[in-house]
Image (cartoon, rainbow, N blue to C red; front, side):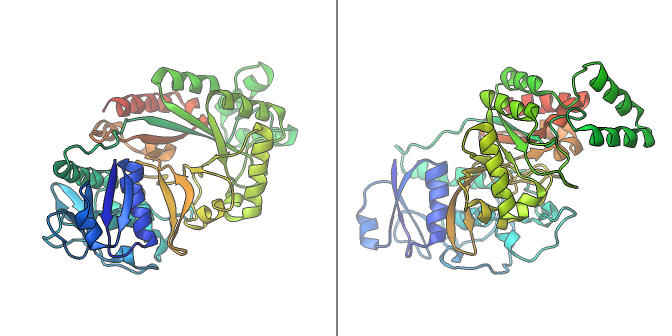
Length: 422
């Protein structure tokens, strides 16, 4: 299906936003025209995005920010229309009383994160500072909701229009920050851990260490077979992200040279998509990131496509600018570690847009809905209240360590089951 869009001027922001909304989500082929006579003469599906309506076409009034460049401190007032929040209000001429394309652009580009703000304890943009949190719509895929409103207006005008049909999917992204709890850490680190547990009176951990070392009991974090069964039994898509950084105060994993770790990475690659979880140092230093990418590709014998940050600051937008210099195609870091919801307002993947350079990147961002921390801290009844009326997908960030806790593992099962059927 092809649709013609009239705009007075084609800017990078307009090109990015309409390709995301109309092409990537709704599934249209789009053409722009800046000529009024061409638009009026066109007999197919069309709409205009401008200051004034041209005739009786579908018309969304533009508020102007998509024609601008740079980042400015904006005064934003959130209102409610048809039970849903919106901002960037338009006049009564518009078929929708707000500029849905500008609203979507604001959230997708994380415009507010370019503005001065107080960072949280891990140096990230706090959920509490976001427009969505302050106005009570963080847990709504609000961009998807706006686009659904727009699509119904198009369908009402053009009866034969065909839109993409979304299918709900639960995707589990497993962060392997510590491949094993006790095994293969070397004599000095193992002794230090044993002494530390003893001094801190962690006798259950001491007992577990001894059973793992001397009685061939499974390591508590060696839950990979169980994770694969979870994937198959619940019919979820699963990805594993492996930490390959050098040992440091932030990186406590076993050495990436250990054969057992390399075998694990290759083995999981036989069942699922695998990717890299960059170390804290790699997030800030491109040379270290490149080194860890090289390690992954040598161990796995494949080109790295996916990456994910968990429990560190996202370092937005610099981290995505660094990724643009690599061959990485997909990122799964967009979300808040301590809150469930949609950091960018959508459950759909989208391309990174650099507001400093005013250009889109080929990096595809796959936002997550909840991470381990948020899953633990959120009452399960909160998840049971979710109604997936738009067939949104849910990306859940967990770790292999989470599956060593029987109670939390059961909670993950229950949440997954509900999200697949709600």
